[in-house]
Image 1 (cartoon, rainbow, N blue to C red):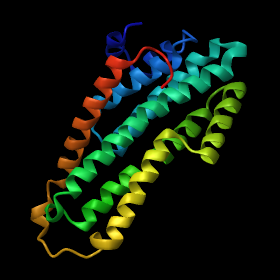
Image 2 (image 1 turned 135 degrees about the horizontal axis):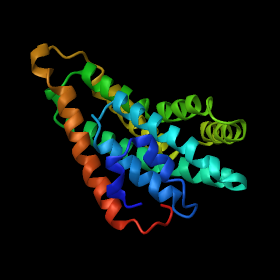
Image 3 (image 1 turned 30 degrees about the vertical axis):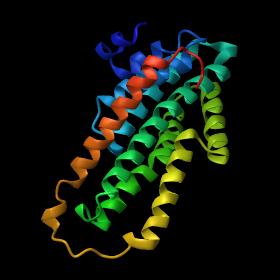
Length: 218
């Protein structure tokens, strides 16, 4: 199914459809998720909504794979991680760009953005786990195995998150922990600016990835 067709279907149905070709599951789940994220508000609520719908579709679509269920779910999980790794990169770039402007935002606003970034991997894994509860026993078992393995070894998303939080932990220890005295009106639009900056980075990254994607795992 061409990528452009997915926008006319409910997201979960498109995700189920993406599971049909065992050789292209990772590529198609990644492309579908990237597109869905671009159409959402760049925040935790939007991310979780996309995760839930795509994961529900994956659990329905994988039911036809029989003995190939394990491999199909591994590919789908990798596709989701690919997409959310790019969301984490975009969030990291956005907060770094705004942080470079120094006094244009407060310590509280910086913390809020870092908290949002910090939740990306946990929201990913928790949503995957919650959706697995309603799957068939065989699918549920494989989904749980993937989730617990990722919790032990980490994900691409988590590695970007950890790197970003570590960098800002060092910065905040040196200079960002001081309480700023600027008035609240000066920072009213910070959340919107962060979302806009992150969305811009994400759109550019996902478009470049789409152009370069040959269907091979990245």
